[in-house]
Length: 136
Image (tube, rainbow, N blue to C red; front, side, top):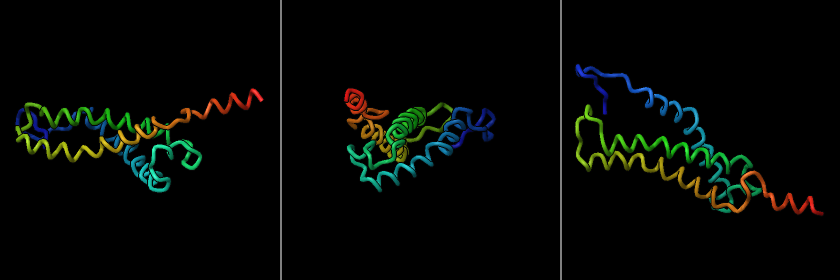
């Protein structure tokens, strides 16, 4: 897919697109690698995220990463499913194939959010344990 202006010349991508690409390069790609490594090391089960064996930063960053990545995919999916008028119309099957390439980049962050949110421990430490220690 190539963006063209009114005269048919190649056009610069819009600023929102450049911002999404930079967010991917600076934040999403490095964390994707780090999260894959942590999940391979600690098993990737819902109970292993945020427990004492996984890194303490991992659970909260999973939520931030997952929500950020999912929201950046909204304009991408919208552009694929409802292409702008300047883009030559492709068939529905071609758009479905293109959307399927982006689907793992939506599903993996969504999985991280789910396993991070399903953990029983409080986000910033187990407060019930803190209260028990103060009462004794």
